[in-house]
Length: 455
Ligand SMILES: *Cc1c(COP(=O)(O)O)cnc(C)c1O
Image 1: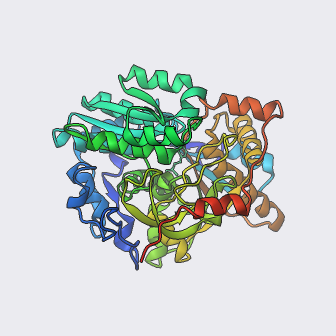
Image 2 (image 1 turned 180 degrees about the vertical axis):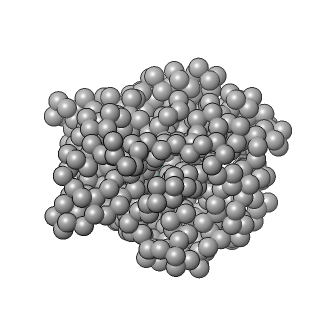
Image 3 (image 1 turned 90 degrees about the vertical axis):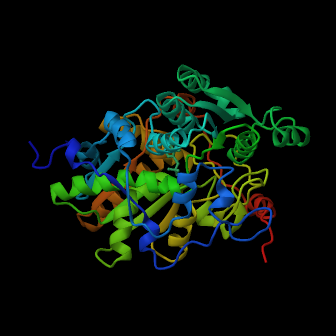
């Protein structure tokens, strides 16, 4: 029996009861969101037509360090949390590495991902404000599923705009959302003005997250007593996801462990921002200096090849502008990219931290992601989401480096979810039809050309 258990679950009374707001410890704040009408910094009130009030407040609050998790949310969290911290003994052995590998596993709920952590919070506050329904977008489907669960729990209607290619490739995702009574529409759709405009220009469009966001925002502001919610990128989402890192840190503290390296995949940045939150705090306050990696797909490389600039968060330019690492809201990820993480932008908080040198970013290619995913599945028994496999891939690289240097580093990575709805992609990998796609500089230039010119 190893001294350190394979799995560590905190007890209910060891669970964090507050979220941690990383902005409170940042020496410099991210640049403010801009109102798309006036191009002036946005006020909290400007957000009220789009977000419910408490969430608008959280979005703008860069000062409150610790925020109590309301009991109504804790009740829900306790159903599927705490999530386990797992020591990857078998993977370590296979890699013949002196490194210690830990992962925080967020796939133990029906959405199969960490997204439920923020979905519950957002639905709770909407219900508390007396709203009747929410709208949102979903790409791969995890966010739409998570929010469907949360809306069913709190008794809210939900309209989901699902990126058309996912809608067609993942019919069972749609079916799961149906179980929770969500209304799911493929995007771009003829149900909104912006959808009709995109369809007129590109009738064959298979959609993008940016486009589905535009539709969901339009639907929310044109429906009575509805608001819009987003599953990533926003400050409020990173705040809710801090539960991941706080639990991980509490569990590692019990084991007397502290990571030298923390690794997370990055789409819009929410799981990464949540996982690293307490460790970034240590970094910002000079207590410790772990190395932090964002891992993104080579086919959608916002951190590693994007520009740090103001951009719209959606294709239809109806959302506020954020200063972030972006490929341009006009960027269209390759259709053959199966691994998720296809969003053109990145969390403004993480963008600022990356820009100021507090973290590293790397990109990995589709084939190596799936290679890492299948090795992990065989050794650790969990079939990972392709998104999560980006983090696995980088973890393996770091562990192999340790084998070469003989350093016994402690690595913590975020295993954000399961890949049961990604079997077409796993099949393509296994039968050899999957290919890598790395956009050329010319392809990226087309996306950059869509960046707005700001003062
Ligand atoms: C949505 C998702 C991601 C990426 O989103 P972030 O906001 O970057 O965390 C990663 N893994 C899984 C399983 C997801 O569902």
